[in-house]
Length: 270
Image 1 (cartoon, rainbow, N blue to C red):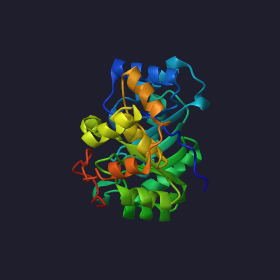
Image 2 (image 1 turned 60 degrees about the horizontal axis):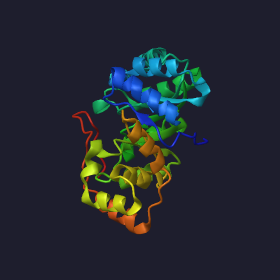
Image 3 (image 1 turned 90 degrees about the vertical axis):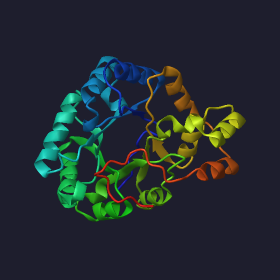
Image 4 (image 1 turned 45 degrees about the vertical axis):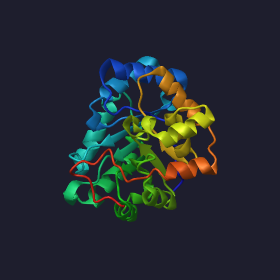
């Protein structure tokens, strides 16, 4: 399996809706972003689709990701739900379709939804497929199932306070791309003294330092913002070069602090 190229920086859209989301998508595309990440659960696919449609970029220049919610994991329902997502996004396909969360309590057998995901790719509903919030054991299980060899990414929470080293290593060892959601720990990186100190050294912001740290690990990042200055700063962060001391200091901030930890989450790797 050849690893597909997921654009390094994407626009995250979690918690964004309506006019703020429309504005964010337009600003991001104007600045050169080409990767937009949404999900069925965000209840904003229609707005993303309308914004992209209004912007008028050729479809092949865009990379659209959506995620299938855990109540739509039965084979036929998964395919139907993805078709609905594609329709809401005003397109014929998504570039990447992810299983948002593994089935809580394994209510739906993993073989069923990994197989359905592969079928969605075969049908052309998704160019590429992957998973999100899978533990190391779940990722190993998924990859051993029919269709599992097609998975190209595991989208997981990664930021300085949750470096998730074991999971990141397992994803990379599988030849897959790591995609980090909530890379700025919902703004908490801006208050951290260590990150502020490194930021001052580089004439940057703590958010930029964090994104640069992830970028240097070949991790795709999908921060969200509605402010043009922040969107631009996120782009510029990819050009920063951190030294070994910077990286060691950032790695030392890990405290296993999760932002996303719903009651249906799997038993996380420590």
